[in-house]
Length: 196
Image (cartoon, rainbow, N blue to C red; front, side, top):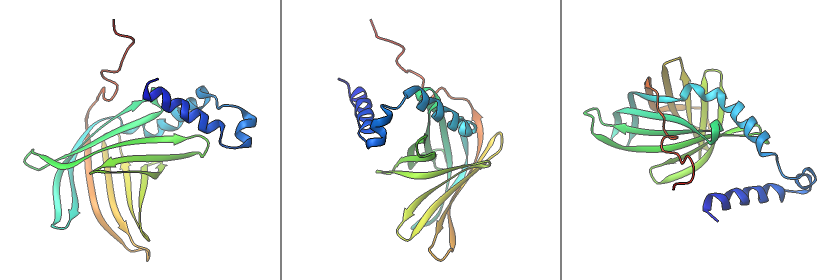
């Protein structure tokens, strides 16, 4: 049994074993779950494509100017949004930052989540989809880091802020991207059927 099949079976078993109410209902209907997920994810359709533009972040040395790129597509028939962010120095050379993220929706909790993998770290974070874009947050002790995205038809602005318990806010990141084209990532090269 392949790892993907084993993982799918484990998820179904976990859902069935989740409690008496889950057992009374029987296993969840995969078609209904996927339909609800795909419907919710259409709110993020604006992210699809390739994006590029100026950005900056703060580090121990101060403010660092970069060129940020993002490529965004869907997986699992549109029920997941996959994002790769990669930065470049202003002279075009690759910079240190490269991240991968997955945006998803849980119909049972009626909640979005952002799964992020960057710089050797990983986590799942609350994601709020808004009419203007989205907001996702990372707990940082009593403080938090908040990323707020807004968009137009061909622009994507995202601001990162450090929010202290007293309500004070310090901006630590900003990117201002323009849509530069379509992409067939990550579906390009997907298996079409058994190879002969």
